[in-house]
Length: 155
Image 1 (cartoon, rainbow, N blue to C red):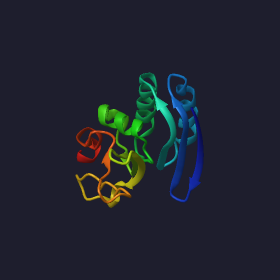
Image 2 (cartoon, rainbow, N blue to C red):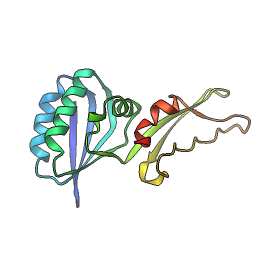
Image 3 (tube, helix red, strand yellow):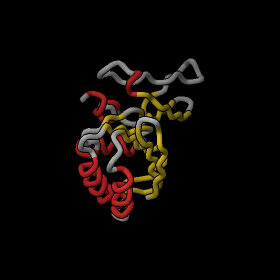
């Protein structure tokens, strides 16, 4: 896993890139050193290709050591990241999801679509609206089961 940091007026944006696995522990140690004095951190997950169980463990350990006294946001969370958040609450820790992707499919047209939603723009404890299909005779549905995928929004 690699990362890049962009300084913002109110904190730092961290883009995580690649695979989060057992080898990520070294990156997380370096990242901790660069972020320990930052009060607001936004982690962007859009370029994370996958995460395995040892990567989850390394992430949770990293987040626990970092989060005290900080505002932490997760942005552009992919399906893999949302599934980890839903299955392992400590993956999110005290952070909040600011934006996330939802994969949609139209079973009639075989069309696929991916939409980014800003969590703050959604009414509390509601699912985001599915996009309309180009064909008026059909409708798009989430690729994942809604009751399982949107658990993090219901908390």
